[in-house]
Length: 328
Image 1 (tube, rainbow, N blue to C red):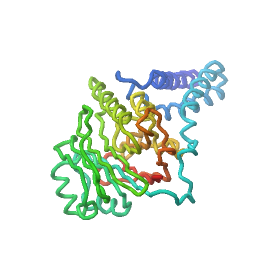
Image 2 (image 1 turned 120 degrees about the vertical axis):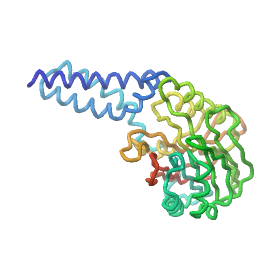
Image 3 (image 1 turned 180 degrees about the horizontal axis):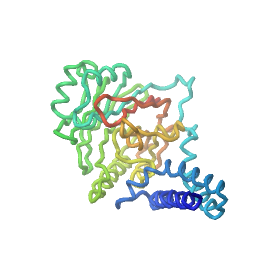
Image 4 (image 1 turned 135 degrees about the vertical axis):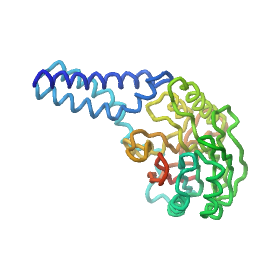
């Protein structure tokens, strides 16, 4: 029995090693790296269990390997539990304008319209990004009351997974579609608040499917270029089909944007699939480009994060993300 347990522990550690290697290689653009990288949090847990098992069985070399394989993901994951105080709006902070945003993937328009609109009314976002919005879904959602709640909108509904919409309670000063080449049309709009304008970009990136990873990384690169070119405050929200452990997503963050979950120290976040969430694919990013320079500072530019949570959407395979922001 003991030899079998030792080999089982070694097999688990081998799987952990492959996952950690995928992350260290950047979770890049060649299968299976993007698919494996999202399992880094689970690799940490598996390494911890395997290491303890090796200690119990007194297989010291295996235990040492387990300790090393545990240390790497822990170093990468610990910062996600630590709030970035520079970008967190204090609980008693009443300065600035409140802005609540929400993103929801409605699975080819298949989300229950009545329940979806009821959830949206309960959350009461100022801006709502909807991915996989079909023409029929637009009609059904409007009939359920979305048109009344959000009189301002930038819609590009299409059959299947391609369509998107950006709904707003607030008047839009400007609007359009992402100018950078992308697989799906991605609407954007500028809302004017007393503290100043905020550009809001809805996002739906192509998934990192085998033999199509290039489309995925190209979509994320397009968003990074847009971020660099955007002056002033901005919000990007939607289904990025990418996690913090993917290099193409981190390149977007490298433009000066910050993930609201990460800012608030939310730890291990999971938004997909909705029934048993495994990966954090849906994000709200905030940032500001001061004076049109490449130096971005979300707080100095006037936008911070106050709260974030997920909501289940009946009929969708993603959890919705709702974020409370402060615009200064």
